[in-house]
Image 1 (spheres, rainbow, N blue to C red):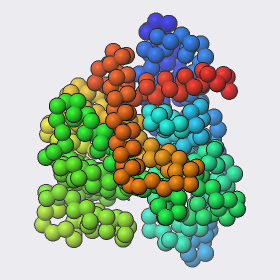
Image 2 (image 1 turned 30 degrees about the vertical axis):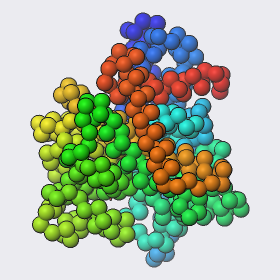
Image 3 (image 1 turned 120 degrees about the horizontal axis):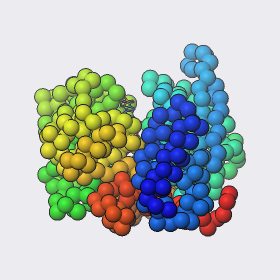
Image 4 (image 1 turned 90 degrees about the horizontal axis):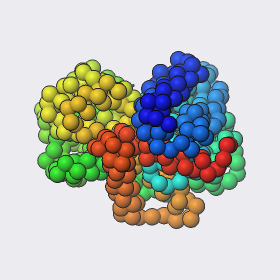
Length: 451
Ligand code: NDP
């Protein structure tokens, strides 16, 4: 197949994705971003085209939608919607987080599940791709309400998951508290201690050391690899970080450990810029213990910190930008602002936070860009290590897990770099991540026949 006919075929696949999945713009975006890099693979490997692997990979193996009724503390009934999209299991059990946020719909879950296929393949740890969640909003809900919601959610979800089938974890709005309630209900319904059915569990009851830290740590390690490739390191670099949840907090922590300085964090109401660098203990106290807002951080920090309501955190001058909140949070205008201020590297802690237009701006300016499939894969990698510990009834030290995480992130960086070079796109981590992830899944699908 020539390169031009490969491109035509991929465009036709994308048109079919749009036709079959109407009103799912985030899924269309995620699919386009992968498909537009695959032409060289189709051109070089006729068996991939013959087996219709691209046509098959964009269609989830299974999609589950269900009703989640629950009662609030005043006895009022609410009805939310639950989702689990089991996208691809060629490499292992479906694996991917659950998101609880009012914006969750089928298209969001599909975009996340689709990305997860390639990310999980890149880890090399034998995990398929899936994602799930609900349009439930945990903000402002009591612990008892969150528990009742999680119990109702699991009362349906349990029949679709299992340590050899599908292994959910956390994502936006789902942290240690929610995983605990979900696991408790699963254990009660099934009467089984099946530790490997969920990851992100508490360290005292089947969880892995360093899972909480893994996504943020991993993204900083990936950024360090990108800088090393350019003959630089993290020492003395200033970074803008968005978000103030799990990924953002441990991004800040690892930046500080490696001699860089995080200047900002944000939430949906605005951002904080702290000239002295983010005070991690204060941030953890407010976000992890009190479940407060970044505005509270600014009020308690003193004169070095300012809260900017609304506004774009990407206007703060820095060497590095690590978007760690949500999809499409960094657009072309923000990218131009970062470039004007001399940014050297942008690395996605969140999933798809940088819009395609913004990626183009960064690429044209020669900024190193780490796509989430590669850069934030540390979280799911340590989840896979948690599954390993669970199946061996073992507990690994924090040092051991962190050392394995560092190796995985270096391997992913190397794989992306080397694949991009091999396919004629040197330095393009997007192409490298997409093709390397795709080839691993495609080889397994080819070997396993038409299923
Ligand atoms: P958390 O729920 O812990 O934190 C999310 C943060 O992002 C909060 O500060 C939240 O602010 C902010 N945020 C969420 N939605 C929006 C929005 N629409 N506009 C502005 N701010 C928003 O989630 P995580 O830290 O776990 O996840 C963050 C990102 O990282 C997501 O894209 C997720 O998919 C991705 N990711 C997470 C992994 C993990 O291991 N947890 C693994 C790989 C990727 P507010 O409280 O105001 O809503």
